[in-house]
Amino acid sequence: MIEEDNIFLEAYLQDRRNIVEEALQRYLAPRDDIPAQIYKAVRYSVFAGGKRLRPVLCLAAVEAVGGNLAPAMPIACALELIHTYSLIHDDLPAMDNDDFRRGKLTNHKVFGEAIAILAGDALLTEAFALLSRAEKVRLPAERRLAVIQEIARAAGISGMVGGQTLDVLSEKSMSTEDILYEIHRRKTGSLIVAAVKSGAIISNARKDKIQALSQYGINVGLAFQIADDILNVEGDRELMGKETGSDAVHGKLTYPSLMGVGAAKEKLTKCVDTAMESLSNFDERARPLRIIALYIKERKS
Figure 1: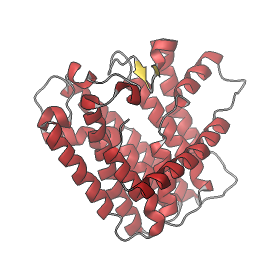
Figure 2: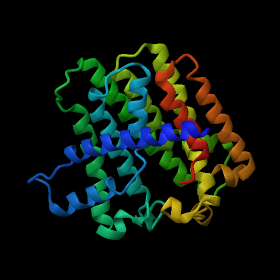
Figure 3: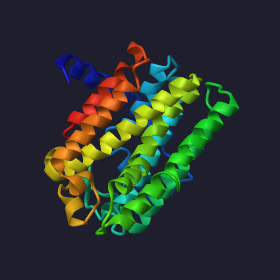
Figure 4: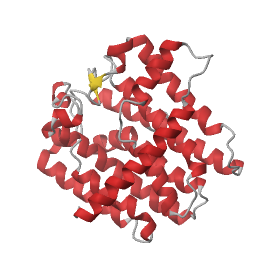
């Protein structure tokens, strides 16, 4: 990316992250009906310093189609709650068995496996409570239901859960690029696609715009996971906040393990280029989406 794009993206991401953080603090405010330990466990992972990529993409999609950010805030935050739940569960000993996440001990290392599982369950459930709650900004019921359906599909058995299942079953086994694509499309890509599509749906965007954003999300989601796989091989542990080389230790199916780092980088570039092409009929308001795609190719953490 050119220096001007870097400066714009840094300011944009910081501003959007601040908005999301403030909203998450409101939505996860203390409540008398929540046991203290589960409340601590939930907040420990939600506020561990993530990139907030999915909520930022949701808000960027709203802007790209000329929508209003206010109705999209519960959606953006719900996406982050679902993403955080998936990380807590992915880190468990029965799954990826990771000790660190974002430079901190993983949830189960601090609170124990039982509370970590419950914290993930709580976040997934609270996400849908958030999506369905009444807000000051009134929206047509069909739009709200369409968003809930989109996110439920992305998080469920045909999306993230299905992708994680394929990932577990593929460990230490002979697999193909088609299987690897399905893992990434479901496990990582589905929620990213849901983020941009939900932003467009809630903004009442035209069908062609929603379809274009869906194609953008598919390619950005795959690019993000390929970049993650490459960083697991050659990334800086301090910058990433977690151990590198763990994919190889656990026999994970990744693009670097399947085709080599060089070919994986070529695949990453192709995905980003295709994502950019899908935005060809969008105006300057889609600039954040374009620069985020370029950032994914060059990210170091």
